Length: 277
Ligand SMILES: O=C(O)CCC(=O)C(=O)O
Image (cartoon, rainbow, N blue to C red; front, side, top):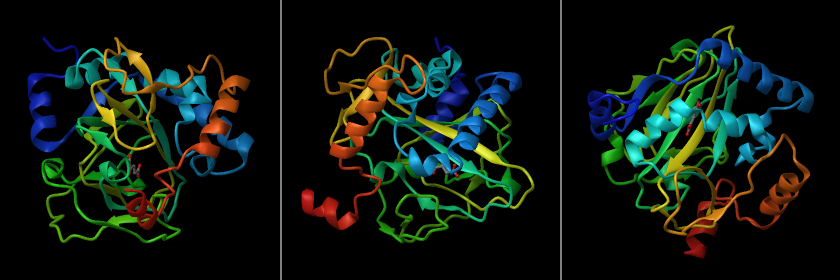
């Protein structure tokens, strides 16, 4: 008996590697999260993802709350079972008329998990449609072996190293992931996805949270996570500190230390990673 996802939606995740739209909160709650995010952005005076690219939920309690929205965890439980780890999250914010884009890529290539039974949930805080640069998916691509990627370092590419798939593939079956505020889309970590520039007068903001069962083993240095539901009976993960409140000094210290010691797979070049393996 599932909690949120219908049997048809579960079938879609297996067949297509994605399912959407799933309403996980009402539009007022989504608007309130959007206002909170835009307030942080106004205070920082910069593009927040640039300064907080990995695990910002450890610094902001509201982000932790967003990633543990009960309906969302219910949907995740339908996919991976009652024990749920949340290793990271990422903010994806495009301004109105933002020329930046995301090239076709697979998240699984720059995070190591075994088995790759890992899912991302991208929560829309604004509407997200083709004209403002919504996510695009290649359904079914999660079932194929990982493809070769290169780092382009294109500044207009929102991926940290401008990663893009170099293998030939057919994107004629790609679909737009249209979402309204408060809806989310769930995708497998190996699913090929991208997004186009924002051609509209509206912002497009979404926040991606990553989930897996505690039985999934991290195979690289990004081996810390928060247990957000159930129990960890495997011990593969070290625990991140719980964010009691925004910018809790203990968490800020942990975060700074994490940055200093952690070899960030987002910023490490392919050559460095190859040399390390
Ligand atoms: O939000 C976007 O435009 C891209 C998001 C993405 O690539 C991801 O969630 O992995």
